[in-house]
Length: 457
Image 1 (cartoon, rainbow, N blue to C red):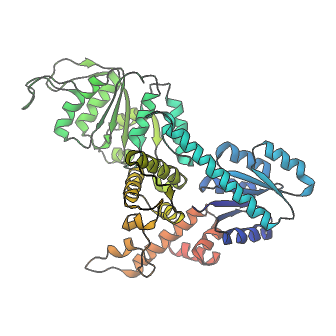
Image 2 (image 1 turned 90 degrees about the vertical axis):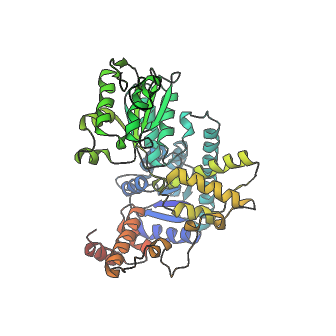
Image 3 (image 1 turned 60 degrees about the vertical axis):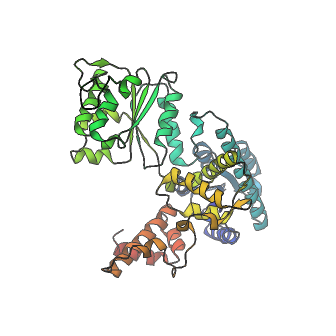
């Protein structure tokens, strides 16, 4: 898989020369003209290797090293220093730098050092994956991810484990919301008590009340005996309300009562039942918007949203794709007795470029399908689903051409949309650095700025 190298140097000529060399070697190269700009690029882009000059104004190379080690420990840092600053370079090694290079820079030395750094990072990731796979079924570290978004999730999870606070998990379908809920429960104060999950969107609204709160015999047609609801079953434990955004206003009121009064009332019952449960809820919809639209109770929203956890979509977790793919492939090998070693770099690059509308669940299905269809030791592109393979459509993506309606389109307007989408993607990938974005698009910086003004971006 292509590795990303961030070059930070306040000397433009040195930065440009090294950038050209590394691109020829097949690396994805990001650049920054100062330490503070380097921090900005690090925060907005997945980076494997950081090469930084030691002496820079404002934020020095040592300060940048310290920031990277604290916030992105998986990034391999290589320091560039003059002969007179060898002592500083040695100090950098003690602070966690992978290696250092002395000036004047020898390009061959740089290539070898970066290659070794990539190998070390790959080994660290493999070890991390191995440790995660050895944990229990719902162990905290079982949730795989090293991307910035997932590190924020882990940090929040750590803080809520020893509390009874209500947790609200928001994320697209397939991002692993129930897995996070289970990890919080089985590592928290109520780990020895029941964990009960219910998908509120999967049950018709007229039956959901009975499922949640139970019913008494004869309360409605088909109620041939008393039945305990999910809240009663989860007493002293945790109840996970998935897709709570689909719940009716009537049921929202009963959930609010369960939160406030710690009691529920069965359908057809005359006496409330005391319950002590921790509520973890989740949804893929925007509940704030639902509140504004009058579709969700504001008071309930604020009671549920005490500790909000946002699970990022897989397309924002590119760094995690190799880890997750290896995890699912290992699981497939164990289940089937196959010995597929991994994915080719071409196949992995295609997976990194995919938008993953189904997120981690889709990735798991893709790996199982591809592994099933693979005859050799490695999964290659021909085993991937058709929508992930290279297309031959005159340079236009198959997704773009397949939606052509019978009535035709306004081509100028649609081309503006496409151009705007490409510019946004390039600017985002470049960490907001317009010169880098223009380079990614193969146009001049002035041309990019003109297009952004015209498209009001």
